[in-house]
Amino acid sequence: MKLHWSPRSPFVRKVMVVVHERGLLDAVTCVRSVAIRTQPNPALMADNPLNKIPTLVLADGMVLQDSRMICEYLDTLGSGPALFPPSGAARWDALRRQAFADGLLDLSLAWRGEWDRPEPLHSQVHMDAYAEKTAAVLDRLEREAAAPVTGVLDIGAVALYCALAYLDFRFADLGWRDGHPRLAAWHASLDARPSIAATAIVNDEAAPVAAPVRA
Image (cartoon, rainbow, N blue to C red; front, side, top):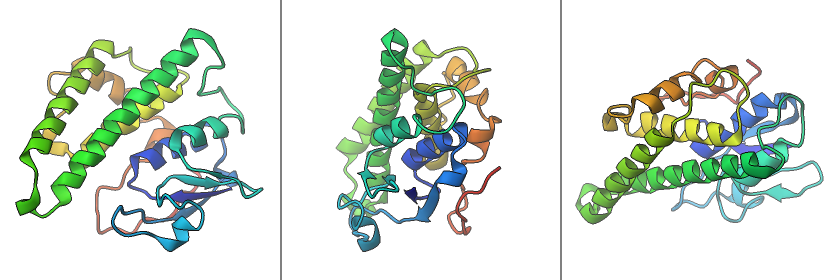
């Protein structure tokens, strides 16, 4: 399988955590792909005309174009405990938490996109709205924070870890841990997990990043 991949995409990181958790690293070839909204990438668009990553190309040529779909597909392969509960309340709760975490990522990416515009073009109305929504999401997550993780993950936990780690990467000054001690403790409990450590976002923008290898 071919995965259009970037070391700084939080949605790609979510997929790569699943790859590691399911023991699929040898089955996936990561292709470094740049996906910028204003700069269509012909090589990426040949597989995904939406010009978005992650994109997974299967051996039979079928293309999966969304991180949630890719993660669920990968969870049917490999070995080890499943990240997607098969049915019932546990499944819906895991999917709910994944959707909420992905929503936080969408919000963070929009906020980052506004910051990246030339300063005279910044929309303060949008910036204020992104900040208010992010604060409200973090407060909700603090109320829902689970105990530190010591065993099996589910996809909701994977997505949430990646979303919060992206705030560390792009919005370090936000200090999301302030006022959210339970959420911070939950997040810290996963830092040393092999699949998390192996997919850490590189903070040095100038540093070359190779495709992932088995940890």
